[in-house]
Length: 166
Image 1 (cartoon, rainbow, N blue to C red):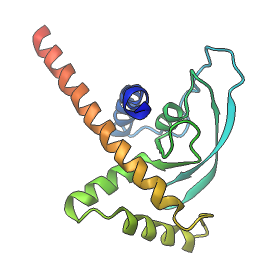
Image 2 (image 1 turned 90 degrees about the vertical axis):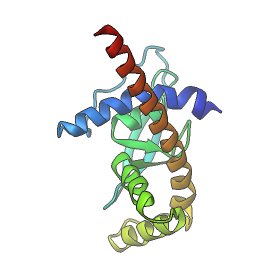
Image 3 (image 1 turned 60 degrees about the vertical axis):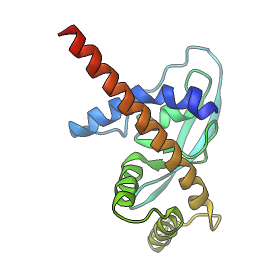
């Protein structure tokens, strides 16, 4: 419920900004930091980022109510696998690729996760738990699909508004 009511709506515009930058060929590795407006210390959280060709275990996030983890991760081109304090995030490009792949093949998150885990392990990027990526990736994939639906609805709304203004 919190994903649907709070998190997904808050990610619509940051995700659209990410897509805009991607289409212009600009990098997302160093987004401007989110400024804390509540003057709290927040929580420092290490997040493992999974990309198509590697795993990066050194993403540090300073999480607080005005700078939630999902917002910071999307601005960095990542999608969180958990809501509040994610330990794992996946590349937005990878999630989009998987959705495209599943349009052309029978969807099988377990097979995809196993293949990616095996591939990354061959390059020295090992996960601690056997099914860690599978469980969390499946959750992230479902939430990302919801985000795409909400983004498409927002784009349609903006087109209607622009038509009325013209």
